Image 1 (tube, rainbow, N blue to C red):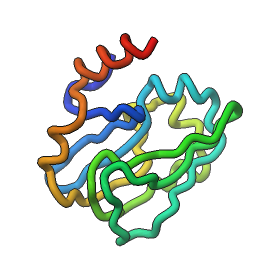
Image 2: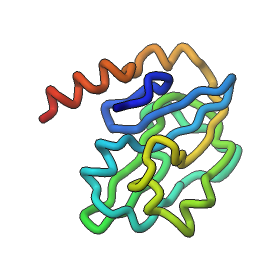
Image 3: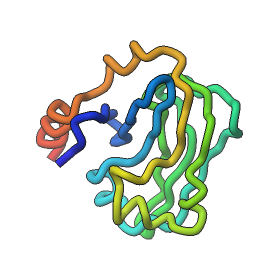
Image 4: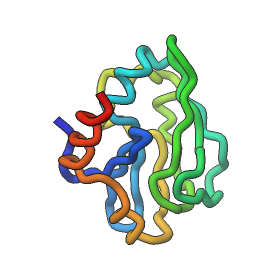
Length: 127
């Protein structure tokens, strides 16, 4: 169910790595918990550095507003502007709809995150 080439956080973000660049999005579990997403906001500007675990934005749904957290340390390089017009893309295609892209500072931090199998076990224990 969850793409095996991604890594996952306890806060239900995913990260997909392509060289030094990584895309970050919300897991299918997260979007189901939130319900219909109506707005996505990123708090930092392109070029700013985020620390692992730091909030980088919010997702607003019909049910709640939820913070988004950085899976790893890195420099913010791009926001998915499609989400300005189509925030619901996080509901319809959560694992292909990235929110931000970063340039990772230390790829070793990925070792602290869940694999797809570990994330699915984590979800089973959460239920």
